[in-house]
Length: 489
Image (cartoon, rainbow, N blue to C red):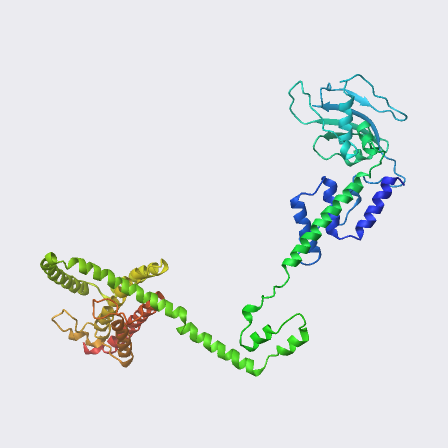
C-alpha cells in the first residue's frame, strides 16, 4: 500500500469518530484553499443541528468518503491508468495548435527545446490538470502577442485497463478524477519540498488539517459566545415578582432551588379553581365596561362634539351684525321649502321604497365606519334612525291600519278595515322600535343626543331587519284576515 493510500485510510478512519459538521468542514476545505465567512456560518448551523439545538435540514451532509480526498486510493489488484499523450492545446501561450506531446510506455521521456519553445506551457497545463503541490501550480497564460477568445483547453490520452481514452481538460473546471493519479513534479515543486534551511514541509493534506483546526476553533468560539448570550439574566424574572403567591414563589427561585421544591409549590387546588373563576368573571366585566369600551364611547362622543363645534363655528360666522337680517329671511324661506319638501317626500315614498333607502344609507355608514370617519358615520347614523322612525310610522298606516286613515289624506278608506290588523304583538314591536329611534334622535331633525351612544353598523342592520320582518309578518296577517272577512265587503 502506498503512503498516500495509507494516509487516506487513516484519515477516513479518524473522521468516522468526528462529528459530521467537521467532516463537512474538511470536505469544503479540500474544495477551496480556505473557508469563507458563509462557509463558517453554515458550519456553525450544522453543529447546532447535529446537536439537536436546531431543526436538522433535509439534505444534511454525510461522513467523509474517498471521493472527497485529493486522490482516491487505487484498490489492490487494479492496474493504475497510464498517461499516453497531451495534445490539442487551445489558447495556451503561443503554442501552435495541433501539436502533440507523447509519453513513452516505459522508461524516461525527455522533452527538450530552447527558451520560449513551450516546455513551461506544457508543464503548467499538466500541473493544473493532474496532481501537484498546490503552491507549485501556476496560472496557464494565453498568447500575449495575439488576442484570443474561447476557453483554455487541452486533451489528454490515458490507458485505462488496456483501453485508450481521451479526457478533455478545461481551465477553471473540475478535472477528471483519473488524472489525479498522475503526480507532476518540477523545479518549482522541488523548492517546496526542500527549503533553503533543508527542511521538508508536510504534505498538503496536513496543511488542510491545520486549516480544519482553525475552522474548528472558529466554530467553538462562536458556540461559546452563543452559550454566553443564552445564559439567563439575573433580573429576567423581575417582571413576574409581585405580592401574589406566584409572584412571591418566583422571587424565591435561585440556583439552589430544586425541581421537586417547585413541583410541590405548584400544586393546583380548589382555591385556585375559585380564583380562576373570579378572574374569568373580572375579564368578562372588563370586556363589557373596561377601558377599551370606555375608549370607544369617548371617541364617539368626541365625534359628536366635533360635529356640534363645526356647526357652531358656521353659525358664529353667519351671525355677524350685517348678516342677521338677511340670514333670518333666508332661514324662513329655507324652513318653508324644507317643510314642503319633507311633506312631498313623505307622501311620495311608500314602505318598500323607504326600506331600499335605508339599505343605501346603511351601506354608506359601513364605508364611513371602515374608513375611520367618525363624523361621517355619526351623520349617516342620525339620518338612518330618523328615516327608520318615520318608516315605522308609515308601517303603522300601511300594515296595521291597512291605509284606512293616513296622514295628509282627507278621506277615510272604510272598505280597507277588513285588512286592518292591530294585535298585542304588533303594538309591542312598534312601541319598542319607536322608543329606540326617538331615544337616538331629539325630535325629528335635531342632532343625535349627546347622552346616547351611537349604534354601530351591526346594530343598525338588526334594527332594519326587524322592520323588514315586521312587514313580512303583518302582510301575511293582513292577507289572511282579508280572506276571512271577504264576505263583509
